[in-house]
Image 1 (cartoon, helix red, strand yellow):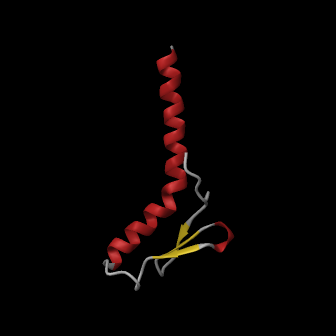
Image 2 (cartoon, rainbow, N blue to C red):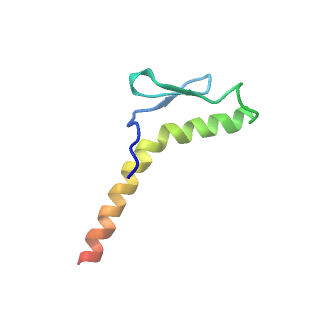
Length: 68
């Protein structure tokens, strides 16, 4: 699996996605997307570590069920 930067990631009021070690991704004025789209993208990026953990948990559960 591809390596990623684990969370927690947070979204601030300026559409920055801030991760551990204060790493940030900006999705505001430097893009031609609307503010609404930038905020939605920032929320998606911030939620990615939790979504990955959920998917891995579900995958393990399905594998357990298929082994029975």
